[in-house]
Amino acid sequence: MTGTHDPAQDPDEHVRYAHYQRLFAEVAPAEAAALVIRVLTDPDRSMANSAVCGYLDHRAAALLTDPQFPAWQREMAGPVAVDDFSTRRLTEWALLRAVTLDEAWSAEELLAASNWLQLRLAETSTSPTALAVLTEGGRTRRIRNIAHSRSSRGRR
Image (tube, rainbow, N blue to C red; front, side, top):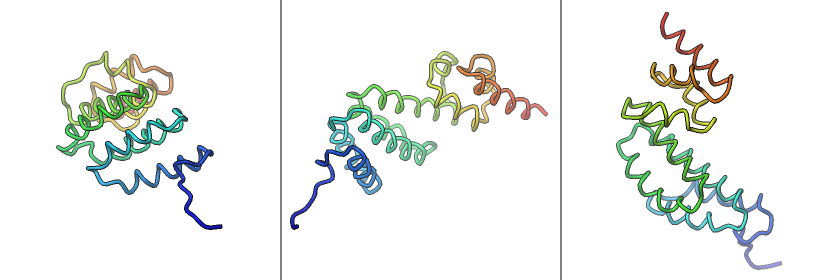
């Protein structure tokens, strides 16, 4: 059997997802927006937004405190605008950055955030204000308890 197999055309979404993960792992920053656009055209929307969010999570974590984060966020905002889940994840990374760097953010934004962001902040934030907000109004008992425990340790 000769010829080449294009994983992006494979009917198995698991094969395509693995292919997209490899592409995101190797993509140059200048080509990332185009790749996001391409992946989000996949007919399996759930798999596509999962692949894109994996990239967003990896890249945002690497840039979280870097001065290049806002430019990267602006660059990604257009390509992810077609996908509500990816748009929300990108927005929540910006909120995580604001809390982390003690920039402007509001309790309303934090309380409207997903469980993913609230839990991440409850587990990692050093912001007494964020921990207090999550202790009082975190979405789940687990989030509230973790935030309370971590804020209590900070008061000792």
